[in-house]
Image 1 (cartoon, rainbow over the protein chains, first blue to last red):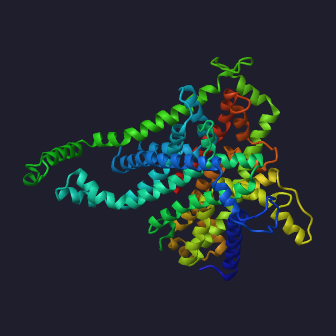
Image 2 (cartoon, helix red, strand yellow):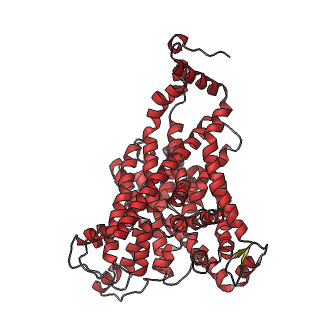
Image 3 (tube, rainbow over the protein chains, first blue to last red):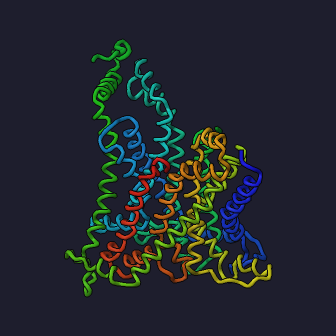
Length: 265
Length: 306
């Protein structure tokens, strides 16, 4: 439909933007294998020894473990709360229904520092000590929207006539849920859960205010970058973090592939 | 109204019968089901989140005792007075809003042509590949993406090395406002691309064909059809670019070279200075900015494009 010149210009622009998007990540990958202690460019020697060093670093290990625990628990919480809200909004018409979508998106729509500080004050004034659970509460709060949006989008695409047919055929509410609704929404739930985990695993700002003295993996890395210590270990750890956040996302995108932007028109 | 049940099947199995009775009772009372579904998430968000926000807001009107460093619950507007009267706090607020605006405009300009190319010109396979190229930096660790720009922009980094090879003078943008602008534009770009992509994708082909049939050229069609219809997507994306920049204190710490944004003021008052009431008062600025922004955004239909 458009002229050749437009195509070429837009194609070129796209290529440049993609280069801008990917170059820094490619650089991180290369730096993770930098043998030297010095962080300059170009890199002369390559080695995988920093991965081993990072893996055997007790602080990094402890932080990784804390991040995994917090991520799993927050994802669980977000799955429960997000799906309940999505079902309620999908199935029922009630006063304030529009406000629900607004309410769930608020924790990530507001600047992270606000959410973080608000929760920090909540725990401090409530006399709640900072622990794994305060991190989990914070993460679950902003992960709800991920599950909610994923599930609501799926519910809106699945015809309600299937549920009605199941009821007409004599199935009770549980059976309808088990044999009709659950199979239709399972991939959306898994996808939402994976995204929520990735979001939680990588979060820094809210975590900073809800973690107290302990370090999740991103907080550990941030501290190391600030102090300029063990930068080679930072490089290796950061590559591992990228892998750990991208992996669930890739699976999640595959699970929801027939929908979203990738569908063929 | 009596609903059709299968009594023969249910009979003799008390558990099943009970379940069926429960199921029917719930089916007959939709408000009960709605309340049951809604109560836990609503309670969570209201208690944990809105209550927290309210607590934060109250803090803004309290003060810290100079000697004991304890928060004193006297009602005062001193915190706000300090902010309004201090030139440096005003400057930081303006600088932050300025950077957030610059980042938003930059990202919109970068995203729009890419999104148009992806949806209207690329083959399905290329489109899928490009989609991955956008998703990878969206989900690859936030810290990693900021950190990698330190490697690029630093004195001995990739940028200066490349400039040196090309025989150009080196530049020291490493730790500055410029670095913040570049890094923020980089890390939030995928947040802009995705909603713009979705918005452009929703434009029906028939509208573009009609425009062409009526004699409009490419540029005219873009200006009169594509841009207005994609605008909700751009606004939806800008909610993220704007809000994320307003609340960030890590990027300024890592690449800002001492230039402070609002996030840093709040951060240092919560942490080192231990003046939570002042931090809370200062934090009302980004909240107010975002509230106004969200209200304006709502009018463009951006919430449907999120």
